[in-house]
Length: 225
Image 1: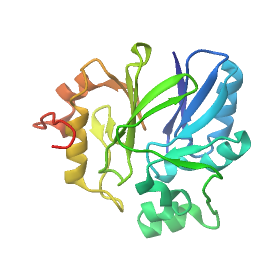
Image 2: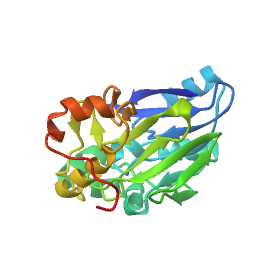
Image 3: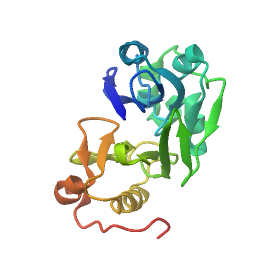
């Protein structure tokens, strides 16, 4: 399995590309600010053909380039319906003055083909199997993608869980209590599960369970509890 990526733009949001192997089809996860050039370089380096863009949530640092990337490749974007409105109105996911300062006269629109993610669904795209987990708290429509094959025992956690930290909940749509419930469900994953976060370096579920100060006292909880 090929997993590669880079931190995109001033926000340094991790953009990932996942494929069964070089020379195959692939999926792109979270094409953030000015991500087009980095994506093109990786597609050329590994001779990949993208078939979909997957979005962990709708914040602008993760979806900035979704329109141009999908439009140029003629591919769909997948997002949870609770965050879909952020594709065309990203300022609504930020404090009003921050949104005004960031975007100025820039306008954003949905890609032509938007498909909605559901909790518990399994996506089979480009020869890659990814399980969708709805993990609200950072945003109402935040999701994770977990590899469903032995050679991809990894969780693309978006802004749910980072190495040594968790996602913020003080922006519009955020909720700390809901975030803790989502984190508790995530902690039911095996310790060896690699966490590929929306920002910063990779980690593992076990490392975060042991050392992440924001998880202190948080017990694993099965989905729905």
